[in-house]
Figure 1: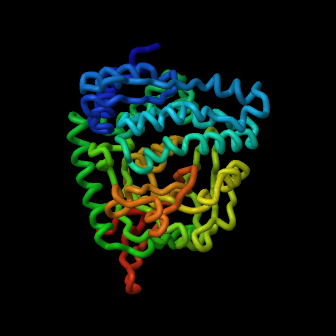
Figure 2: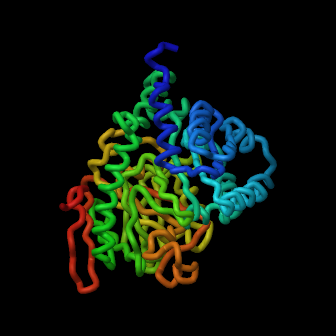
Figure 3: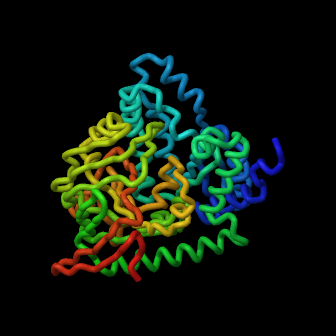
Length: 414
């Protein structure tokens, strides 16, 4: 392989250090649970090094392999697709209850399952969602410090850069990841501190406004998203219930909060494809009434979308609304990553399913009953999809019929 096509080792090490020290802010004495594609072992090794140097007790990796995943879909009995390793997720939940930090690495081909039976995909997703709920709630409740970041997988890279030789494509994806993650700066941790300060400024202003609704308008979109009572906006760094401040997503360009599950009305169209569990769902168009999706269409992946919406009652309602300017670095890269971690940070988005309890004032003190009373949604899923672009405008509607412009032409109104 020509040297110029090799992944930059220095930048990879910076990414690992950033994940441990800014993404997780791991503390001495914590254990760390990592899930990762087996291909990302070089990054996992570097993360383990930095974690141990920062005082981690144990680093426990759990690896996945795309070939094994495909083997299951091709050869497993029908009963397999209604199963999930409940014991594994119970163990993860117990680990999080014991203050274990969580890090997830993404990097597999996002279209791995595009040729597989949507019925099997839907059943498998439902089984995993049900089994993983106790562990997932520790994440959505911000009980522990957690982080997601990316490895430039070769199949994923070829998906984004199909005309390039695979080694060159991987190098291009690696550089895109480094750029979006601010690893290309002289001091990534300082760059993230400044970025977090900017996101905090935006989220604090929105929380102070206490809007009743957000009104999205644009091509094919006329959507009013009611906001939950006592909602609070978040963005960038967040203090978890264990007292540690972490950056859950690297990269991240969003500020976000909790919608009211019963107060969403109108129609909205996706502005980017959604890659979900190996299936591409494109040109989504849904209609909400009293907070619930009553009609859903997609030009591609509609069958999978419908199965997602039927996972449980909360799957047809919103758990998150997020604002991202069109000028974000990921948007300006003009790349479609086929991965929500990146694509959601190129555009405003909404999420079906579970809300974040942290997005309430005093969120670390309120109960599940109070979250429901305030309008927060509950579900086995949390799936983000993009609705923002340079053609989208957003207004904040107040409690006294006031209207405040927030976005015009896809950008913040300052």
